[in-house]
Structure formats: structure tokens, C-alpha cells
Image 1 (spheres, rainbow, N blue to C red):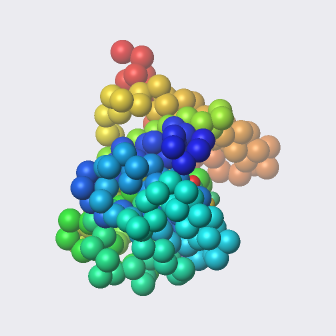
Image 2 (spheres, rainbow, N blue to C red):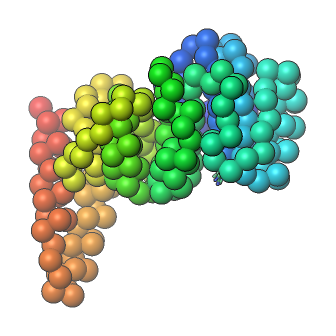
Image 3 (cartoon, protein in one colour):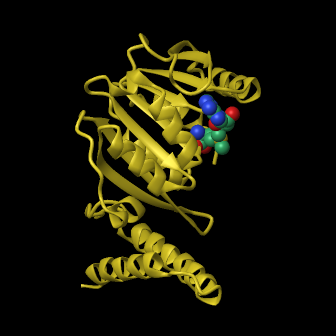
Amino acid sequence: MTKDTLDGRLLSCAGFVRAGGVLADVGTDHAYLPIFLLKSGKIKRAVLSDVNEGPLSTARENAEAAGVLDLCDIVLTDGAAELSDLGITDYAVCGMGGELIARIVSEAPDMKREGVHLILQPMSRQAHLRRTLYNEGYSILDERYSAEGGKYYVTLLAEYTGEASAPCEEVLELGADIPHPCDEKEYVGYLITRRRALISVKKGKSLAKENTEREESLIRAIDKRLREYEK
Ligand SMILES: C[S@@+](CC[C@H](N)C(=O)[O-])C[C@H]1O[C@@H](n2cnc3c(N)ncnc32)[C@H](O)[C@@H]1O
């Protein structure tokens, strides 16, 4: 991957960013996502933010080399709590653990502004992130799946509605029953990988004579979803 092309994971994130908007890329690091979107003309401005100076200076250098630095605000900050009054329409928080992303969302009141979209790409703890979003009054509008280097990734598109909800474990772990026409192959791969991991946890728990109901119920839910794709 370079700043001119994106890998499948970041392309999934880019697909959710709305044309003509202002994207804040929280934890931007190399800034590949906003640079790609600025160079293609999809977004008009970007906020590149990071908690660490090293990644932020890489982001600045990359934006300058790509000729888009004048379209960027560069902000050194923890999370997104201080990113307001910048006209942000879309927030991306990608490539971090689900717990950290959930914390960043919880602490950022500007993400609850009407019309703002969140593009969230957790590397772990997806269920925790989904639970936090639903508890705090966000709705998950869509999900996309991608594959890179033999690994599967999920990207969530969320928006604040003010209506808190508490979906079941299956939805928190595997996503709502959203059809995935454009990334069916990746979603099936994701489900198979999750199934394998659950079987391994179940085996370990069985050996330790622990309760495996949770794993069994999730495996059944995965099998049901996989059957849908076999039709
Ligand atoms: C693995 S990189 C992900 C880069 C890019 N977003 C991507 O998905 O490819 C994670 C970045 O998040 C930054 N980060 C970690 N905790 C953060 C926080 N609390 N607030 C802002 N940035 C953070 C790190 O400094 C690092 O640059």
C-alpha cells in the first residue's frame, strides 16, 4: 500500500466517506486514507489527528509530498474530544482496538452532531464497540468486510440517533443481519474465521469443564448465516 493506492481494509473505510465532506481521520498515522480521498477529489478538506507526534509528522510529510497539505488541518490530540468547529462531516477512527475506538467515541460530543457519520474499523473487540455504540444512542447504518493478508476486517458506519438500544449477543458479535452484496466473499471468510476461533475456545473450555453455551450459540448463529449464503 502507498498513499496513492489503498489496501482492501482502508478501501472499505474510504467507501463509507461521503463525497464533498470534511473528513477527520483520528489516529491518522501515515494519513493514507485522507490523502487518497483528497487526491481523488472525493472530499474537500481533511483533519489529520493523532495522539503521537511521530505519526503526525509522518502524516504532514506525506500530505505535503502528495500536494494536499493546504487542504489539511493537523491536530495533535488524544481522541476526538477537541475536534470541533472544524466543519467535520465524517469521522474515521480506523486500525485500532475496538475498546480504544469505543473510548474515543464516548469522549467526543461532536460525533453526536446531527448528520455526522462515523467510520469505525476495529482490529479487535468488535462486540464491545457495537455494544458501546448501541448503548450510547448510535445506530449502525451499514457494515463492510474486507480481506488483507489472510485476515478479515469489519468496518462500521454509524450515526447518532439518540435512541439507545441493547441488541442480542449475536448482533453484537456478528453484526446486524445486513445484506452484504458487494463483499459477500469477505463476509463469508470472516464468519468462517470466527467459527474456527469459537471452536478452539469451546474445546479449551470443554477440557477445563467450563460452560460452552455462549460459544455453541454463536457457532449455531454463524452456521445459520453461512447457510443463507449457500442458497
Ligand atoms: C495502527 S495506526 C492506524 C493508522 C490508520 N488509521 C490506519 O487505519 O491504517 C494507529 C494510530 O492511532 C494513534 N492513536 C493511538 N491512540 C490514539 C488516541 N487515543 N488518539 C488519537 N490517536 C491515537 C497511534 O499513534 C497510531 O498512529
